[in-house]
Picture 1 (cartoon, rainbow, N blue to C red):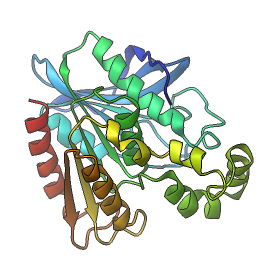
Picture 2 (picture 1 turned 90 degrees about the vertical axis):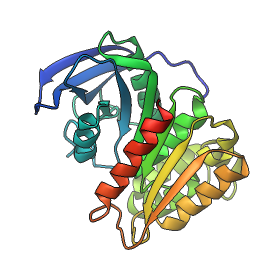
Picture 3 (picture 1 turned 90 degrees about the horizontal axis):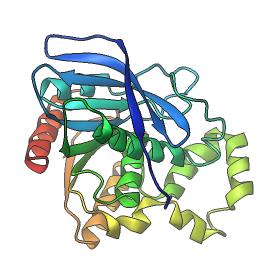
Length: 279
């Protein structure tokens, strides 16, 4: 994904579920030639505020709604004083259609997150351009891994919850091949089998490029996650550490994929980490 990025034209739309702590608006911005929608919370007050771009997990685009997937994180982080820009991704909600997103291994989602950061920086709203981070969960965790390797230095820190594997083959074999046969067939016809076209699959796996990462990263993962296995994150942590990268890894006994009983603890740790790294 070595290319130029030009996120721009961040525009506020209708006001959403604003509170005394923040105002909320639907937004859109340009990611390359595509319009991408999202949901933004801006804390009450003068600012400028540190900002976070949020990358959600997989939700069928046919049923996805604007801002879906990380609503509680948006609320919590905005109340903690962060502007939050939750990216819908291309092909979701009010974004432009992206009929080949799956066949392209959803790499366009990474482009949309990178361009969201750039669009935030160009926006004339109350954002501190020098204090921007990334937060993602599940599939969005993989999007964050990609962004950190594709554009090192873009942000100041990143946090992921219950992330997918940093090896794209793991994700393909767990979901795409067994659950999306037609999509898998098109992908394999285009790129080849992982066992015979190893160079391609290595080059679309963020783990291959962890040496490029410059930002501190925090990973949260539960031991009872039956969607994204905990060993995936253990291997990710080892790979990052092998390159001398700054990674903080929190394991939650008994916690499942969506995070329930220990979600508040994970958010408290996240805010402490962000206050330190975005200072």
